[in-house]
Amino acid sequence: MRSILYLIAVILIIGWLLGVFYYSAAGLIHVLLVLAIISLLVGVIRRA
Image (cartoon, rainbow, N blue to C red):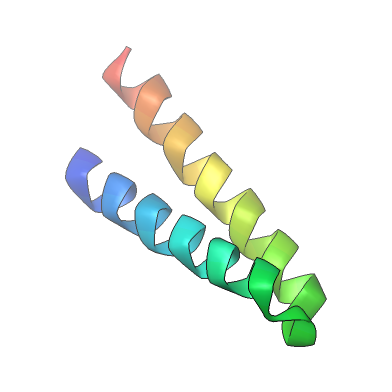
């Protein structure tokens, strides 16, 4: 389960980074960033 969360987080961060360069979906960029951070935090909390 932990590897799936990290995979999702990496995909979301890459999507966010791509979105930074293309301003067409400004609201979606921030949603992706928040989801990636939440996924990383959940992974860290479950590991502890």
